[in-house]
Length: 528
Ligand code: NAD
Image (cartoon, rainbow, N blue to C red; front, side, top):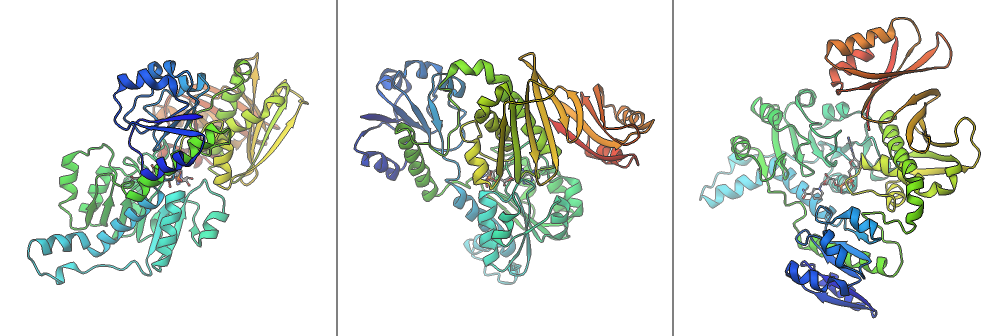
């Protein structure tokens, strides 16, 4: 008999699913005090929590029978993942349960700002019968720009197409089939989307890359009278710039469910509400009964799968059943992850079809190594936690095709991990030297020797005297310190590849200036 303890409220449907299993016994204690939990946790095979229960070291060390922790929701800040992994306890969660809820809230904000529905309601409440004041704009025939065509972006696309809108998307990390299947026109650079859209809606995670993604420069290129909706994460839109362009009248309407700090800066809210076409909500994208029910159902299904030895889809951590191999393969897992992160940036997201190779003595452990490469790639682009266990599943779900190659043979190195974008024609390979030194040894066709760490400026240039000097002078002029330098070339006077390790980030303008040096063909900042 499997004993499952529920320590926070989950939907009755979820509990029902657990109780239907003949070999599962459920204890539903949604308000259990922590002291009591510490006492009884030893008797359970699984616990299901939300964010209230701290699943910390103290609790885990007493949980002698525990095999799985189900987090009803996405964030796992309340779970000591590392310790759970060490103890071989699986942690599962429920991403995607609120996709429809967030989608519909996006549509609500869109309609509010276009039709003034929320203002019209308020006006009637104040006993005004003012029909002329509430002239609106139709969605029909307008161009919608979706930034991030993931779970929610796709559902927004489907609904907006049924409104008769023309839908564009910008998402560098999806295969071409996805927008094609949805009847959405894909654009390959953000600025095209910004220039062409009447309404822009954001559905990306908050990452290094998307933080501040919509700032002054982006507002500048948008159409006059554009509408903007953000039900994804605060911080993707630069809020000061948003206010500026609302004041200038360039932005005609804004719908926001999320803010850079939450609860928000009230001065910002007051400033926003001075404008007519603003529709705000306090981060309620997931707040529907159905979404909460989904969370309960999904967590129950995941916990049952985990208890019965079937593979749950949404695994958050990666317990190692065979701890003895971990010290041996750990550096290769780290290298694989770094190579994945490198490639996704170097190939500018063209990762729809990949070839991952593991060669040499390490090839017998190729499976976790391939997963580590995928983990590196996906961790920069998706909203759910990706780990060695779920990386293959998440990649497949996103339509990424992976060709795996393993071979005990190698040439120059005892071990070699390679990852190649078959769409973008970019590749990177790395090796672990002396059992612990991680090195990138090849980028595209150039042999190099680089430690994959920190900020790197990678550029392809014509191999002629003075180019490196020009690059160095430009960086120096902009106060960017160079910590290391590596050059790879095939032949004298041909094409060469330069890699600079930097102490500081290269601002977009400097990168542009760099690529305007005639001998520099391509330059990319890569952060690992
Ligand atoms: P998802 O991971 O399914 O989709 C995200 C998409 O963004 C992916 O297709 C990815 O390729 C793309 N992307 C990543 N970086 C990008 C970039 N730099 N430029 C363009 N596209 C990029 O996530 P989802 O479930 O659709 O969620 C989308 C967002 O909505 C997330 O930020 C999530 O946290 C948020 N969300 C908010 C609420 C709410 O309460 N308001 C509820 C649910 C989800």
